[in-house]
Length: 558
Image (tube, rainbow, N blue to C red; front, top):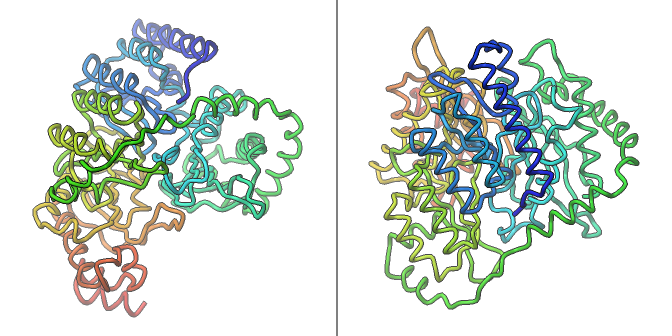
């Protein structure tokens, strides 16, 4: 895990002191809200529907127990006793007072954290595979490269006023768990024919008003070229990106309007121009960063207690089958802790839950935690011998729900309960869907399913890449929910297709129920997932389930 050096510490402290002065000037009236707005956004502070909201970066989703305990302290001291983990591996506090924010930022700096560039038209928090450094299928841990990108992009003098916000995601695995194809730059670690590790580089992905799957601009880029190549991409975007229309300002529109071939030619030309300036110091720095990400000292122990619990305790067995992922070290597992207990707010964690997770990480997981873009918490390194005790502790705190990757493991933005941009509620819809699938007792029968909900067209809930996506809109003052099917956020990324007319607030949960029951009728076997069934049979049977035989027949004819 990266640890701040003297420069990092001084840099973050100076930013906090600078912002403290700006807050004081806002409070005494020396700055108007219009003047203050760009200053607060540079420090992650939004003005939401009811109060200010502070968005704190969790770079590439990595935490230790000290950091998580500090986040719990902030929740208790300056908020209402909880925080909200987001799809960008950040945590948001929804109720801080303006005059408290500098103290919050100072407290974050005490544990090597900050809120810099979690907003604004700049390069945002670099996100990564939440199983990085632990996954059995990864080529290498991508987090050192993510840290290098974070340091390069922080206060980069050329990229502080881009046409629009800019997001980078990276994965070290052939299995894309970081939604790289829905980012401005997506980086997927691959090997070339010689067996050398490098990156497939993807540009122009993004969701929101105009969802697009990113395009491959380089099939293989050596790791030593990554920083100058990323700089070349952002430089070209900074020059060509639309500044006349914020809805057309993202790089996905730049790529679409100019064509991938032109963008590639410009990027390669810029890369050739600036590459000589990168003398190798960046790679020396990367090597120093990599040393801080050494794997923990994995222990050797028998798994008798685990085996016995798995054979005799059906609740434990269900949790193991659902919430655990294969680890690269023998005898270990990756544990995903669901923050989606049926009826709870997706992604919310109370301060008590944060402290418990910090304690469990210190005791059982080599003092490491990860925040996933799916709004859950990951304990990346847990020996199987410790799993029964860990599971018992999680269950006692309401964190033992065995639903990771299932229908109630829903991604949801804050929606109209908090966000000033939202046009519909997201949280209550997610809660009601989870409660309904639990009441029907079909969740494990349905199996792997990604339901994602956004409360407005900005798509913070990633609904476009949900197997079932739900978009809440305002129709003449009434909430209306559109459904899309067939979205996919993995290496086979796809944008979901709209089913037809939207549904009223009190109709959306029954509509989702009909989709799930239709899937159970249509699938060839229990092994065929919802997405596989949809890709095989198409929209027609699902339209019939939603709207009746007439629309289903039209879909078949089309």
